[in-house]
Length: 285
Image (cartoon, rainbow, N blue to C red; front, side, top):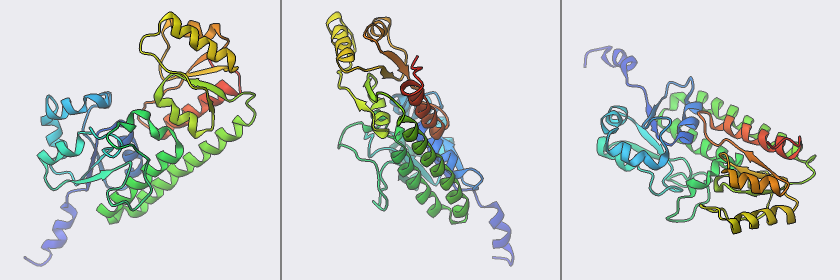
């Protein structure tokens, strides 16, 4: 090699690229790599539901995915809590050298992860709506991408610290505000909101959510709400007219909590604020 060849080649070294598909994972990856020189890649369209990732990556999106992952250094997935996550198996078909990073539980078990039940889709429970779990996911991603690109360590750690400060502040603010709530009893009709309710120690009154609410189920829902003095019923989307009528008729109000967005920490902050509005400010609607 001619003198100076290595030095001249160094600036042309391809940037470290890390690919994600699940919107929450991509959002965390983007926040952690900002300004670091690590390039975050998106494997699927932002608005594509996770349940359709396999069909996209293996079908109509395969060519686009190949361009994204062909020279990627790593992919970040959720297979430990979502066994059907297709990202890593599909990525290997395009790039046998690609490294896997499990954002929910580190492959080397070097950091605390998120509890999961084998062979179940724990990701459907949105565990990242708990600040502790979101912080653990960020820790895992940050740890592995630093090892991939040691030169980015300081910036990644600074980004991680900023994210963790947001989560700590959110937890403190919501817990402090809820001390003024006259009643912390809620009914949760969207399974994904159980993580959020548990994170902030709400008193969840058990109710079996129905796919089709018949008159008997609606009457039972109203009775549970009245008997337990529930003022807020948590949902991630608008209730059907019949369910909404049963809720309001029993003296409670439906509280819609948004659970998706480009910035996972901002989504969680907005969700916490929504709970405070509903339970403290008396403005659930």
